[in-house]
Image (cartoon, rainbow, N blue to C red; front, side, top):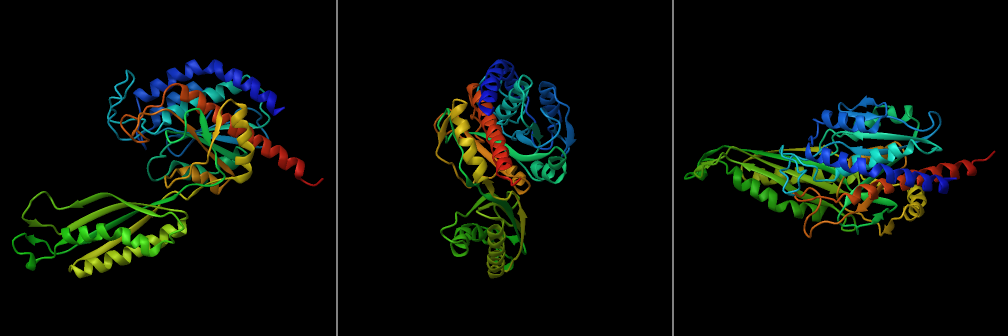
Length: 395
């Protein structure tokens, strides 16, 4: 039954790809950043042709196929990045924001998949989730997962697909278990007595204290984290002073991203950073305040769902790539706290050195079909899992 569904669905999907290509260009040319996705939601909703229930401010969730019984959710991200595009294509964005993470491709692929589903008989509901704020906090996925809509729409499994230039074009990486890191942000604020640069003995040199904190963070990681567990702190922002060369500033700020294998490890590392910052600040006659903001939990692919989907990836005409695991983060992981989930990484061609979030990152139009097929493989893997579990239940 599922094999016949794949054949007819794939045929229907092919017919939807020209319109999906037009939609992708439209979305790419007029992106909206996190928290401002209302126009993008409206555009995608019109193309989708499905009644959507509003959620998470600028998000929407619907259901197609059987109206009762279990369903399988497929996520599409609505937001772009605050980045000036440098691709030079005719449909490039000119509004100072850019779909530099492939979300335009994901949305077009999801629309094609759902529209194609109108021509087939699905065994279980298909729930398109149009999600805002994947790129920033507060997370749109977290809000949807906590809204009660997954339960109300009967969602038993959730599938995501993300383009990635580290995966060979035409292949899909599906690994069971750990896929992406737990994430968080640490803000360190140092304050002290400012003054004249010619009289440092009369003040507290916040600028030097900040530099000591920054250069020592790697040592905090080394002395806190188990070397067998991937752990990382990267400094994204350092702000000290107002631009004058001869003024000792009274405040400095450091903003870091933290990536660990678990939420508990992130909290433990943030605590160690706080103790370290306090000590460095005291040595320079300053004070430190450290604040940790927990981000996404680690992203875990359900083992059974991943194994079931592997065969369907090949069935839809794609290759299976080795698992891709990284300290990247995706708030799709919040759905994994509610239901079994699967994140697929879909290979795309990209210029050497051009990756996600780069101003020249531009997946080609063929990637729409590949992402849609990966989503279909995930749906079919979830459907197979549901059927297998039903057969295993005692009478």
